[in-house]
Length: 116
Image (cartoon, rainbow, N blue to C red):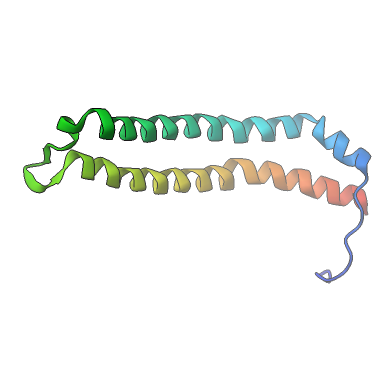
């Protein structure tokens, strides 16, 4: 087992450029962006729809939710903002662990191996 305090070998600039131009790095970028961009757009649409409904659809947002007089549609949708944030975080962690991390690990190991 190697010493974690030992100085790490220097990776050349050429090695970084080679990796940046590789198909593997392109696949890493596409894998990350294929999840991050659509999910970001979907969440922003959902968030701004909630904000706009709060401002312009007051009658709808103030309707009792499931017959509960002190809990309305606006409260429910507001709580769902938190739920969707946690769900998106969980989905991203799962995506990163199963799809992004293996590619990134392969690239890192190749770079570190080239530096030895």
